[in-house]
Length: 145
Image (cartoon, rainbow, N blue to C red; front, top):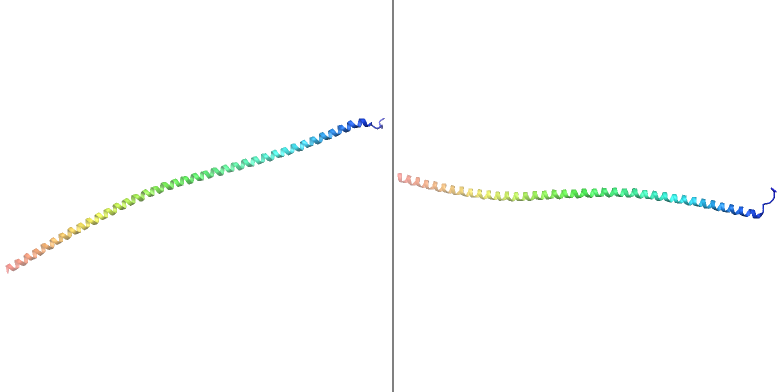
């Protein structure tokens, strides 16, 4: 009987089992392929997230440097304002000093003019006295002759 053909009724369940096994194998292969695709997608998402994290960190560093640069600029402007205020104060003091010096020079010029006027008047008195003395001498010479 070993060479007897297997009845067809016995072949059908075996064929069905083989097809079910093949379907299960295909489903498992499909699941494995989907799992691999998901793993690849997850890996890509992790890589993208890491790139985003790196870019965000670089952006924070740039922002921090920019903020520090702005703070430096603000400090320099404040320093320039203080220097300008000091210069303005010094200029005002110099103007007041120059005004006082001008007033002192004018007072000195008036004093010099008054001294010259007094000297001139003294010289006129001396000249008048000389004339008077000359006149007296001339009169004494005439009276004595």
